[in-house]
Length: 81
Image (cartoon, rainbow, N blue to C red; front, side, top):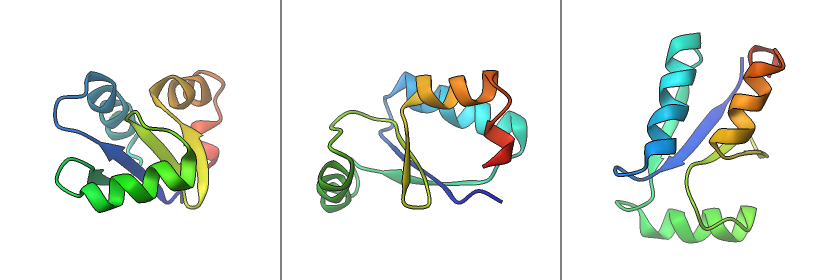
């Protein structure tokens, strides 16, 4: 099973969409609020080079943002992670 981590903020619409997609597929994930954890945000930026959320990781592998997650789903690859 995938080890999905979502780096999010409470006001992010794409973050909500990513969570809804994963929830609808029954794929578990860990959500990390980068507003509540600014040190983790700094780690996220250093690790991925991305400053915007959501940042979606599968273990140590960067999936990307919501668009990349949706593309994996549309291609039938999301459940194969």
